[in-house]
Length: 465
Ligand SMILES: Cc1cc2nc3c(=O)[nH]c(=O)nc-3n(C[C@H](O)[C@H](O)[C@H](O)COP(=O)(O)OP(=O)(O)OC[C@H]3O[C@@H](n4cnc5c(N)ncnc54)[C@H](O)[C@@H]3O)c2cc1C
Image 1 (cartoon, rainbow, N blue to C red):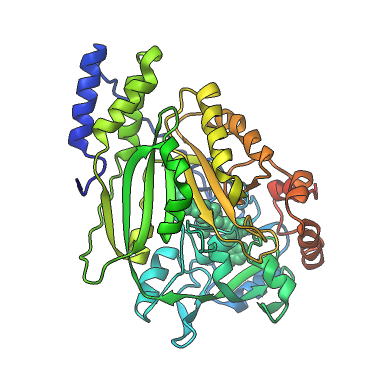
Image 2 (cartoon, rainbow, N blue to C red):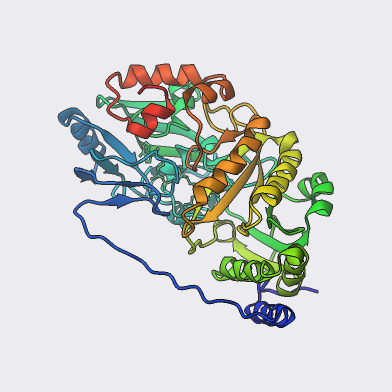
């Protein structure tokens, strides 16, 4: 049986009513209050867990403006993209530098399927812009709010055994160093700097232009359904083999997972894209309701999920529309990438740890595969990876305790933290995970000996405190 809407509001309500009746309870209504404080030049990231009070926010119109700014100013300066990182990469009480005015297509080549864009171009604009020249990004994250420079500075990725992260699609870039020198980098020219800057954390200078290797414009068909987690994990090799892209959203404290597969759409298939911004809230409601009867909570939750999540959700359309999903609920995320062949064992241990130590958590995990690359310190540097994300609603102040409880599991499997997501690792531990860590630090020190592109978080991360 197929049905377009995986999470049907009607079915969630029906399932909730049945569970409520069974438990003689009614679901509680949550109210949220938002406080806002008005201050001059106040910056915060998407989730609100990173904040700063910048002295200046510079929004240059040209590369010359950036060179002048770097040469004529003093003090801390941090490039920013769209503020979609949970780690402290951006915050600056000095100068924040936005490339929002440097956006759009610079040039393209129909034979090589390459295109050069200004690095402030947002991912949501990149898709339609490339479609106009019959090209498309090879793969992307499951959101599209980031700037291209922000995305490649942290090895932002999607899923796909044979598909790399966005940094690995960069074929050339223009970098303005902290002392104002403009340098062209590629695999052939300034190679070390090229490999470092494709996951440069914004500490090597300001990236102004990016040339990407694209693929032909294409349409995708994404299908999502609910399944038993253990049976799915036993079948993971086949799911990976049979689909261009495959990922899971395991539902903690249940026996279930959402399975998502994405493949080329059939010729002539009509557009079909539905988004359900209520899905997370609905899932949490079911979970909380099930927890009213602790002794049976897991089986009641499984039952509720089976009642509420039925059939297969289909998304068909241009690749950039199918892969990007709106995210309206604020949450905090930690993600570690373990060697691809350790992914299943690591996920099983994470799920067991949540059962043992965090029975109150309902927020789904995310489980993806990404092909290895030749960046200097990207999460996929020299190894195919399996990325496992753990999240909690930003509205719960104890999100940090939850993530810290799970984090040591990833360390056992040699996990590398996503640079843009919350984690607690610093210099020494990172050196043991990245063979090129010292080389990256040396390049940074040569380019910026005074460390003006470092904030306090980055100083600690890089061991330069
Ligand atoms: C809801 C949500 C969903 C997400 N989904 C995914 C996902 O599916 N996959 C994934 O891998 N990640 C995901 N992320 C993480 C996100 O892709 C990364 O953190 C990304 O780096 C954010 O890009 P940004 O444009 O917001 O950059 P910012 O967060 O503003 O900055 C990130 C880094 O880029 C640097 N930078 C920005 N512009 C420049 C420049 N011009 N020159 C040099 N350095 C620069 C900054 O200094 C900083 O170090 C998600 C984040 C959120 C909030």
